[in-house]
Image 1 (cartoon, one colour):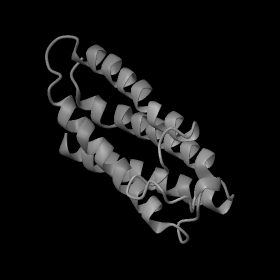
Image 2 (cartoon, helix red, strand yellow; image 1 turned 60 degrees about the vertical axis):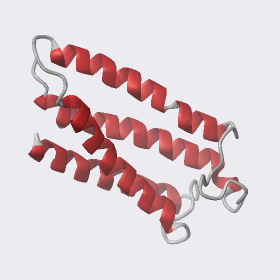
Image 3 (tube, one colour; image 1 turned 135 degrees about the horizontal axis):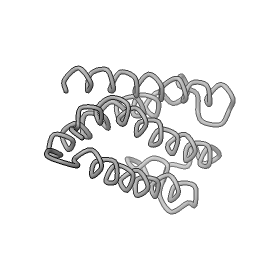
Length: 136
C-alpha cells in the first residue's frame, strides 16, 4: 500500500499542478507566479487527498471490499463537488483565510473549475493506485 500511496500522491500533485499552470497561462486562474499560495495549496491538497484515501482504504477488508470502496469513493467524489459549486455560485469565499479579500474575484469561476478538475483527477488517481490495493 505504501508504494501505491507514494506514487498516487506524486501523480495527483503533479497532474493538478500542471493543470493549474496551464489554466493560469490561459488566464482562467491566477498564474502560479501571481498567486503561488493557491498553486501550492493545490499541490498539497492533491497529495494529501491520496494519503487520506489510503487511510480510509485500509479499513475496507473482506469479501466485496472493492465494490464497497468503489461506491463510497464515488459518493465522496460527488459530495466533494459541492465545494467548487459553492465557490462558483459565490456561496463561499475564494480565500478562506481572508474572506473579504476580493483580489481574485474575476477568477472565481475558473478557480471553481480547476478545483472541480482537481477533485475528479485525484479521484481517478486514487482509483488507479490506492484502490487497487483494496481486496476484491
